[in-house]
Structure formats: C-alpha cells, structure tokens
Image 1 (cartoon, helix red, strand yellow):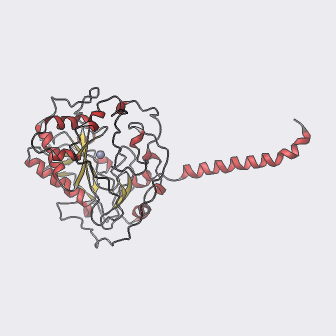
Image 2 (cartoon, protein in one colour; image 1 turned 90 degrees about the vertical axis):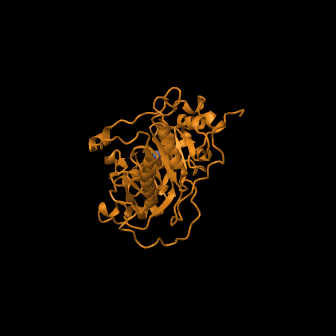
Image 3 (cartoon, protein in one colour; image 1 turned 30 degrees about the vertical axis):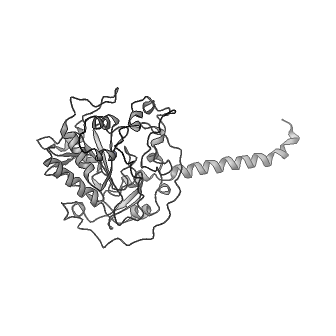
Length: 365
Ligand SMILES: [Zn+2]
C-alpha cells in the first residue's frame, strides 16, 4: 500500500464506514417494526365501537365485531382455537340466516370456518383477505348428526371436493344439495361474491338449469376445494370501507373459466419460500384508522359481544359518526411473494379492482 495515499483515502473510508453503519441501523429499524399480524393476532376481543370496516378485504380492520356462537341449532364453528369467528354484525347475522335457510333447503347445517379476528387485520396464517369482517368460509361438508367435540372441530379433516390433478369435481362427492347451498348463499343481496375452486364453478356451469343469474356471483379461485368463501359488500356506516368492483354481468362460464383449465394457473411458484404479503405488513400498510382500532378498549366480556340472533351486540354504541370520507391512499407497494398462490394474488398489488386478480386471457384469446 502506498503510505502517502493513506491520508487522502481516509475521508473516503470514514464516509463509507458511516454509510454502512447507517444502512445497518436502517435495517434494524425496519426489522424491528412490529408486524400487523402479530398486533392484530394478539387481540382477543373486539374494539368497542359502532360496527365499521376500514380499508379493503385484504388490507384493513374493523370495529364493533361480534362473535358467532360456537354452536347454533344449525351450525358449528370449526377450528375454534383460531378465534376467527368474529365479523361485522351484518356478516354474523347472515351466516345464521344461511344456516337456517340451508337447513330448510335440505342441508343439515353449516360447518363454519374462518370469519375474521376480533378486530380483523392480517392473520398469522392463511388468508390474504378476511381482514374487515365481511368474509366467511363455509365448509362444503354437511354438519354431522352428532355434535362435534372440541377436539373433532380442531382436527377433523376436510373433504376435498376437487381432484388435484384434473381440477374437476369428484362426482361421487358432489350432490344437488351442494348446489342448493351455493345458490342460497348467492341469493342474498348482501353477498357480492362467492369464491370456489374452478372445478366447482365448472360443475355449476355444466349442471345448473333454469335460473343461472346467480352464477355471476360465483367466482373461480385457487384453493376453495373444501369450503366456499362468502363475501358481502361494504356495509352502511363504513365510509372508509373500500368496495370491490362488481362482477361482470354474465355467468362467468365462458373464456375466463376455460383459462383455469389450461396449465398456466397451475405453474409451480418460482419462489415458494418468499414471505407472504400478510407476513410483511406493518401498521403503516393498513389504513391509518387501524392504529386506533388496535388501541381501542376491549369489549367487557366475550358474552357481551356474542351475537344471539339479532338481540346481541349488547355493546352496540351510538350510531356511527359520519366521518369525512378521504381519498384512498395510494397502494403501498412491497415486494411480496406467496408460497401457495401466484404472485398476482398478492394483497399488496395496487388495490385490485375486482378484489382478487382475475385471470387474463392467454395471448391470442
Ligand atoms: Zn376465505
């Protein structure tokens, strides 16, 4: 080393060292930022406030949540340890209504999967959406005659209705009662979208006769082979709830469905170990009101916020204060992969115009 050049280099070295230190500090600061899923996952009770959803299905939270009771005359909550039987009162009341109506249609009762966490927000596992209390998963397995024990609800395996290779419904398992259940769910004006596996959508397209208008709401999506996902629209009193785009005005049985039966949607994920969007979200990625939702006092007890057929929401407070709707913030972009879904299904894509990405036709279509 040329000694004479050292004094000249020193300032560069010092500057470089400072930069490295700064970068390291910044990295520590970023990694120390708590994840929204940890914060929301830790809340055991809803925020006491009028029912209100903030943000989008895959990026938001809500107040005034109520719990679906573990058992009803015609439903049972599955996987109870997850504590995801919370929703906007309109959602919980609709699940109870579906349970009654479905039973009248000849479905023995509902096995109810995840709705939302007590205050919504991203979850530790599963789901990109289910964050604002307006999504619910219902199993495609009828409620058994004997009441399920807690252990059975935790461990009972779900029945896969679709063949993983052909993506077609297993005909031995599908019954007209399954079709009636989906039709009933789609019949409610509050329900904007029902997500099912493409194989199930195809089965409906191929077999439903007479009124087919309800098929418009039934949309194909990855997964959803043992349950369907029922999504209702933004409810009154939620000026900050971001609506999804309405579904196209046809039965969806044409080209968009055909795409699902090409190899393109099923290509293996190139980066299966990349963290999912919900694993990266911090409070900065959620609507700013979610900080208050997180910090609001707990409901006084579980029972006080358990929904009993319309009489509940004992904690219901005054009517929501109409707040000034604000222009939606620009979508926050974070690079996010997803181990089970194509990258396009990320919750961090600019707020999807249709809630979830629709398949694009293959070139030439
Ligand atoms: Zn779902």
